[in-house]
Image 1 (cartoon, helix red, strand yellow):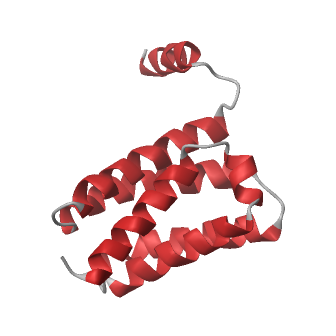
Image 2: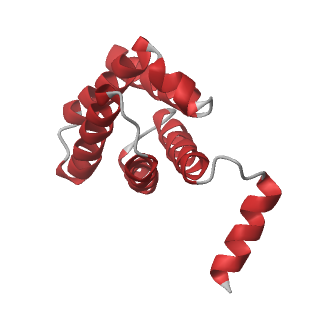
Length: 134
């Protein structure tokens, strides 16, 4: 396996790990900015026009977190869109990278839900989804 491929997998694992924690706490760590920057660079290195929106959203998310003011609506929207587009982008990944991309997409969607409804338990979340589908 190529060294660069292993680095991409390490970056994906780091991003997924951070997103499954407490987002406010994670966002305050200096390392979070570095994780976002590495992720942006990995996407740019892929040189795939299909990934352009991911890069734009990642840069916007990085800038938003860097501003020190957290707008839940902006963060939730970006995380949700990043989650959906990351899952779609998994088709471009190969080998052991593909499941990591899919896991990252799922973590992004969960993080978006956490931001948009931080007090919801899994039961409340399920109840809210059922009400929206009615």
